[in-house]
Image (tube, rainbow, N blue to C red; front, side, top):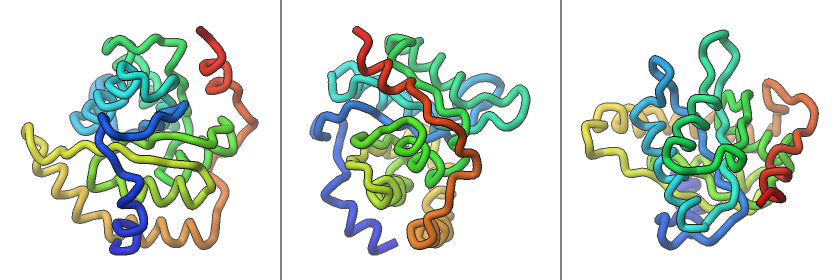
Length: 195
């Protein structure tokens, strides 16, 4: 934990100060009844803000779609479109089953080499460390979700981070393939090239 916090400190920014990057990677955090969970909605709000400010050109939404009727990426895209991000600028990754897989797939499947990863503050050091460990030039923007009635979920996030960091360290050492790899997808490059 200490290593991740110290090593990534210079890459974690506010929305206003983060360097520009072609892509924002938003990591899934659950959907409820076809709507983003409160923590996921806050991540998506940050991504929409990054897009409006011209900090990113495309948003890659990465989440789970293994079970029929549970489609995080499509729900995430619909939310962003509702916040004014053009549908053609939101690319879905249907196999972002965990943070490692989302970062690895961003690089290996979607060809992303430079991005801003968007998540909660408690998760941000790990997310930045994993993406950078995969060779992606990465900055991070986090949501401080302690306020607004999300204290319990945020505290749970901080409590589980040490175990999640152990898994992340193993992933960086062993470099496993994502659970679902598949063929390369042109969606990000096509979205970047479109007007």
